[in-house]
Image (cartoon, rainbow, N blue to C red; front, top):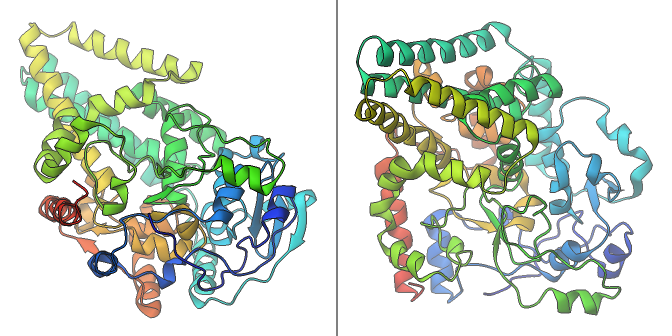
Amino acid sequence: RSSRGPTQPMGGAPESQASLLAGKPPSSAASEIEPVSKIARGKHRRETKLANGEGPARSSTLSAKLAALSPRCVVGVHGQWYDLTTFVPKHPGGDILWKFNGLDATEVYTAFHTRPGLLKMVKEHRIGSYARPKDAVNEDYAKLSREFIREGYMTTDWVWTAWNVLRVFLFLAAAIYLSVYAGWPMVAGFCMMVTWQQCGGIVHDTMHTNVTYNREIDWWIGWVAGPIGLGINAEWWKWEHDLHHALTNTYTTAPETHSRTGQWPYPTPDKTATTAADNVAAAEPAQAFAVDVQLKEDLWAQSLEVLEIFPNDDLVRKLIPYQHWIFVPLVFLLGRVGVLAICWRHGGRPMQLLGFAIHLYLCYSLSLCFPSVWYGFKFWYTAFVAEGILHLQLMVNHYCNQWDLSEAAGQDFVRWQCNATHNVASPAYLDWTHVGLNIHIEHHLFPKVSRTHFRDIKPHVEAFCKKHGLPYRTLPTNPIPTIFNRLREVVEDATSRGLL
């Protein structure tokens, strides 16, 4: 791996290693990380890296490694440094704050926190200030966010919400009637898939607190739609999804700091070392970890960078050269099974487990109404395989984009989200079939906007991107050929580099 820098200054990046280790406010000096605004994009970037003889992934900088190993969590927002070490356990978003240790997280804060006055809750944690560099992109992004709040795009639309809930029950009723009374198991199975898919959309909205915008009420709605309706651990999904939104398509070679759930076998960093030298020694040798674990799969690599994150597994390495052929079949055949296995493999909190038990009981009760095992197999097989549509929708928006270091993306949030996300072409009347995921650039830039307003903000976001020369790309209605070509290009590039 090669490490780049130093490069352009980015206000808020830590300069003093000793200060960060001591929990003091870092100064607003030059960063070792190349900001996203200076990174070439897409195929040109890959060709440039290959021509320069560079490896597919960069190493995290010394600053990032020290931040990961520091016992203090110091985050910058709006020119103020906050020591949030004792606040992390109280943070509703969890310990994702550690990912922004030593960084200016202003734009990420703006994206996720729309209620006024929230920073007053942590004013006693303020320990210093820094100068944020002027950036027209970030300034216009903040203005656009305030405009969307004024227009009411981050509030509840009760009619739309009621219709989305009603749609779930309509398809569930159709699945039951067609399977139990009409004798059409495969059509009924497809209706059950739509029920699950629409539950998935509601879980997505509630875990963003975008249904009622009340955290407690949305949690209960998500509990019904998640473990009971879809059969997934909603809290596991939220933990992964918060990371995915804040640090889309990113990895790190610094010690992993965000593995409290035990979902991934990442080593726990030693935060007891007292000197910078001890910490640096503890950080070596560098190992690549996926930060955006929601977009990291162990059977295919959507970019060269992801290859460095793969385990040393002979079977996986043998499958990757054929990833463009196996991607779609595996998503449909094993998508639901894989998600259920992953989200429950380490258990869950009692309420999540109770919800899943109710889900299994309801599925079992429905199966008792079927005339034969073969009849039931046709119903459930159709539902399981067809649910691959949902899993495909959850991935395609980011699969044509490269990955990068989390600290590079974290300090240039707006540009990176545009660089790492695609929309999918679809007429407005079919938005419900995508559960809103087709208008994805807007969602990633403004995750607190209700999905009922995505079409309203779309022209504004497109104009914003055009004004600042940011990528605003749309995949065709059927993105499978595009994804196939992308995965094949990665295989060809990796083969030419001797990585496979």
